[in-house]
Image (tube, rainbow over all chains, first blue to last red; front, side):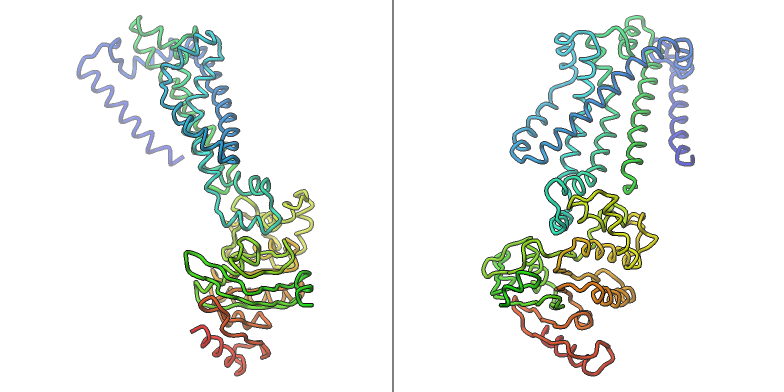
Length: 245
Length: 238
């Protein structure tokens, strides 16, 4: 419980400063809402925000799982084959330089307004940190442990299952935690490119209406989603990687 | 005659040369360890001891000369315990059994009696991080024994331990080898340890064996004959 105190105090302080600045400068709510206006919006738009959050949550979770699965399969393939690693890794890096903002509308044109293009955008955003960390983690196995396995009847598969893979898990989870924070942003980009529901859609609709408090409220819910996913991944890590405190 | 025996259970090393970084680390090494023989190799750091063990274990190839030991007959206990941090003590010891295709539960059943004999009973489920240095070393030894190979190559098995634990484990290893006779090649920089545990001690210096001492004295560090033998070994190292 104690470790929650410092971040909560800091957060309260920042919210306090926000309130003070907005009041002191007499900024109207439609330009930059004060904390109470955002809180009111969370209350009055609760139904709308909940429905939107469920849509976005589904995109985030499924897209994230897709990214994890693809990243792990590709990382193992890159680890096993040196040729593949040399051929594919530069292309993967290159693919990261394509802005998601551009990719999302193209996917929306190709795949329509359904959930599929959203999953792909979320997966593309999350994929990279996981795959890079997984490849690094698999390659960083202690060579002495591998030698030890070879003197103990260990073949290539034994070494992978018993040394390289478990040894890579901490690195894989670092990547997975970073990716967890990207997933929500990816979903919003995808919804902006074409959608009729979700938190990104709510934000898009609120802009021309100057419902700035609602935008802030939606962003708040989005942050909560990202935080929850991050926490979930950390929890799974603590269960699967108990030796790595 | 000797080579035939060596192929079964002993070690025969003949004129082995290994060059690393342009320097001959091993420069014509001959070695013969009979079945169930216990040979110690002592020498300073960098004298080529570990290189020789790697060659015998088949993890590296010599530049010249030949090594005769049945392929895959050696279990190497490396200098570091090399325990896998994600496996319990018992499962670390089971590694070789699982690598050979035994299910985890069968492997555990096989390993349990040895675990108790090594004084590790009660710590089966602990992760290596929770074990003391001496216990980790014993788990590593159990893992090496369970590889079920006739030849044990021990590389500074007690190098990382404090003096008291070290003495305890030396006595314990001596007893364990009496119960489970194996062909042993022990590499150490500790002359006393080699003299206590082995029948024969070779001194390696500048890539060659410079002394060959038969340990035919009482194994007690207070005995005058033991002390004299130790002096002879230390002189050869210097």
